[in-house]
Image (tube, rainbow, N blue to C red; front, side, top):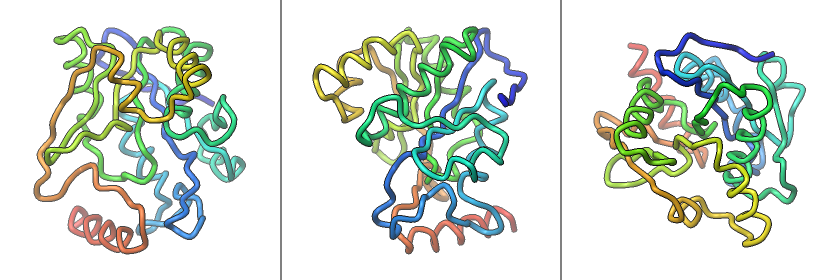
Length: 214
């Protein structure tokens, strides 16, 4: 089932949650299912993303049944071999083209980053409109976060060709081929793009969550 939200943008926006990684530094447990507070990481991410977009897709290569219970479509990478986040972006583009043809844009977010901004999509869209860029990525603290980006869905054919013919795997290498804009968020009192890679990061995330709830 596709969850649809009212959205102020002229064109619909689809969102893909990238949850296809192998999570080796977390002992192999799928990051989407790791608990932060009383909920799984992916539930925190859905809560942030769903009000900002018109359609939500989960890209994951394992634990499909658990994730499907959340009520959103769950798709494996459309390309084999755990090709990284670009494969998830391509999966989102292909799904949106079929299931949400009114959407021009796809926004990608990482499942291990539960505090990303509530205005992520609005600001990325505004930058796309101003700059006419086909890709807009998020930045904070002097660093780019290429997984958090707005993508023109019409790039799907070009992206798949790059991945198949040029073995393209790194987002930065691919985005360098296209007109791109950036939007920067403050990194205080904490970086909203703080991500959970290790058990110690999960402890820090729990402290951030407690501070937000207090």
